[in-house]
Length: 122
Image (cartoon, rainbow, N blue to C red):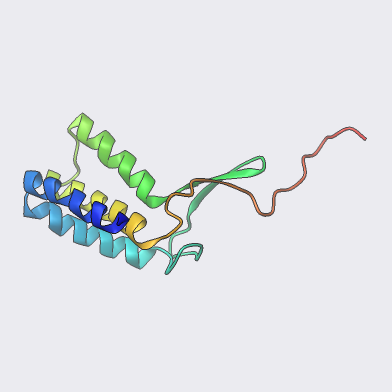
């Protein structure tokens, strides 16, 4: 179901931005597939951004960073390339991250190897 919703969400953007959007989506998806891990939890060619927060960790998924970038860029009217291609590439990154990984929604999680806090009372 989730995959159908994601793919259907691309239709209006493609209509508005033209075929360059779909070309960008394909490029972004392929690049993300190449550089990302083969499955959830497996390190890809580019290391994931994980920020430790006491006994938790914040995983800044590539799809989340791309979604923030495309939203901010669209609001500001900014693009590095032709808008359809630029937003398509970022959209392809979002699509691949949500479409291919089952842990896409896990942004904050408990740390597995959290170290005890230093400086406690004895």
